Each structure stands twice: as C-alpha cells, then as structure tokens.
Image (cartoon, rainbow, N blue to C red; front, side, top):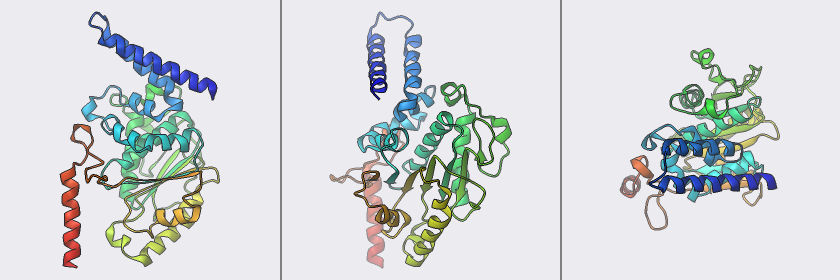
Length: 315
C-alpha cells in the first residue's frame, strides 16, 4: 500500500508539472507534452477509476465525453471513491446508489465493467436489469468501448488483453469474453426474467440495475414481492460468495429490491455503503446540472416535481 500511495503521489506531481509547463508560452511541442498525461493516467489505471475514465475518452472532444462533464458531481457525492472502495480497495462488499432517471447511472456502470474486463479478464461478471432491452443496450455499450479503437482508448490501456470484436459482432446472446474464451463468459447481460440458470456465472461484480419496471410495478406491493423472489432466487444466486454487488436504481418504493436488501444487510454495516442523490439539493437547486448541457437544470426538476404534485391533487 505504501508503494502504491507513493506511486500515485509521484504521478500526480508529474501531472501537475506538465500542467505548469503547458501554461508556459515558451514551451515547445505542447501536444507531445500534453499526451504524457495520458501515459500517467494509464499508469494510475489499476488504482484509480478517475484516471481510467479520463484515459478511456482521451481522444474525444470534451463536450462528447461521458465522464468529464459529470466528473465534478460524481466526485462531490463520493461515487467514484465508493466504486474504488468496492472494486479496487476491497473496503466494501455491496454498494447501493440511487439517482433520478436519465442521469447516466447505467453508462457509468458500463465504464466500470470495461475496467474489470481489461484488468481481470479471466473473471466473470453479470449485469441484470428489468428488461431484455436494457440488458442488450448495456451489452452493446460494453462491446462498443472494447471494440471501437477510434473513439475509446481501451486497447491502448490494456494492450495485453485480447478482445476479438469481429467474433462478437453478430452475437445475440449478450455475452462476451476478454482474455481466453471460457465456459462462463467474462461478461453477461440479462433481464431478471431472462435465462440465468446455467447460462452465466459471477465471481467478480454483479450489477443489479433498475430492477423495478416503472411506477406501476413500484406501487404494487404484490408485484414487488414477486420481483424480490426473482432477484433473490435467480439473480443473487448467480453470484459467488466473494463477488461484489452494485445495486443501481431510481427508487419509487421502500419495498423495492434495494430497500429489502438494505434491511437484510443493515445500513450500519461497515462493508455496506448507500448513496442517495436527490434531483434537487437542500437549496432546491439541481444536483445534476452537468457541464456542456448534458444533465438537467433546476427548472427541469422543479417542473417535474410540480407535475407529480398536480397528479396527487387529481387523485
């Protein structure tokens, strides 16, 4: 740990030095010097999601990137640190993150999976959501990052990790491998109603994302009870004992799978972390007003709240 901390501190000092050099008007070959930061980020990748995410989209215009426009918010609420504590530092066993809809929570999970597939290609990972459409979309997102060398730098960051995008191009089973082909694939995406038994395994990370299929299911206690039985018997049973679990969702009910699981494991458990980020902060301002207009501003969320209040009045 001491060597790791020293190494990260040295890399950060070197990155700061490069920043200072780039500010100097007399500095020559600024582009070449600037790209040295990428080399530093790659060195930090095994220990830092922040460094990996920045390196992954290094060649993209910043306004088209996923991570950098959202970085300040994700850092502010401790999401990146929590993910590192779950997956890299082994300080957590389960992480629960609850956000409003359409703020990028599933795409963040895509980036995390691609880190694992590059760093630990022989491990198995599983993504479960409420529908086959979402599972397929997630799978396509992972496959794109691994196979699109023009947009993403995954192949440069993990040059020794094999991924044959040509082989997987026509795959319809939402499974793929990095490293060597294996019986239980490196990554599988499924719906909670999909085929899980015997089709997949998970010894590294189980992601349970948006398991509740809309507000109608969220308001029906019997449907939520049935959903939990599926999650418990079909979803959680796929994970090995030491596999990490990341629960992601927009919560509409305390009886949803996140609420039930939190009651089971106990929020006071030091190996558990629960992060809830509401749409509006204590000053009634948006928590998701990301840079480059990729999020939602305060007016959007206030109008959304007013629409729910109007619905309650009608009821």
